[in-house]
Image 1: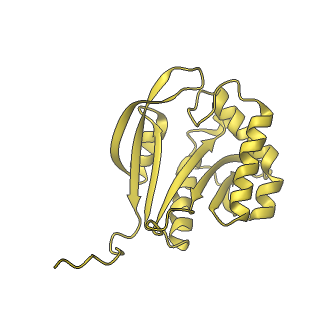
Image 2: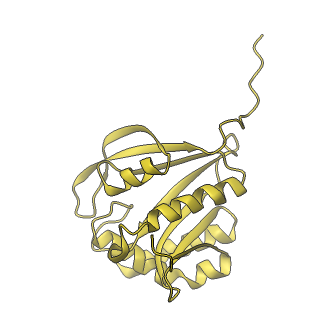
Image 3: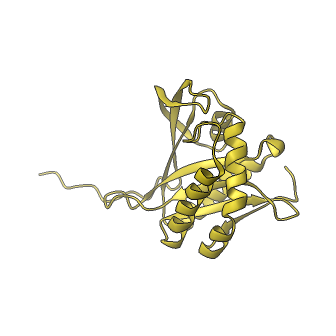
Amino acid sequence: MPSDIEVRRLDANEAAASIPALADVLIDCVEGGASVSFMAPLARETALAFWQHVADGVAANERILLVAEDAQRRIVGTVQIVTAQPENQPHRADVAKMLVLQEVRKKGIGARLMHAVDTHAQQAGKTVLVLDTVTGGDAERLYARAGWQRAGTVPDYALMPDGQFCATTFYYKQLDPARRPPQALTV
């Protein structure tokens, strides 16, 4: 694991200032074949608009944005924790857009980002996390090693950036299984 990588949470101002660098990461991942909601070629304007939406969500306290930076403070990876959930799910968060630049993959950056997800989600009072990923992709091994449980697979759920159908596997992780909402009384 590279010791010169720092994973940190961005505040609203940092998120807004990081939009161009985050767009670079997203474009790199889509060009590399990642099925992360976008088709290839991904226009820079589309990537910038997506990250503006994310920055707005950070400012509204609806999501947590984590980044991995190298020694030159260049963003080489990112992940989000979507904390804004329906009224009956205040304990849950979605993990979204776990992205690592192609040139620095397989160096433990994804694992460090996922460890930070656990920490920041717990600090936000979240006890159940949910995510989805391309079935059979490298990320599945990462999530399994990080303690995520496979919930199931949906065939032809999404498209790869080249337009081919792909299956999606859903995962969940319980951060504090002892913390459960009160059970309804039975009469």
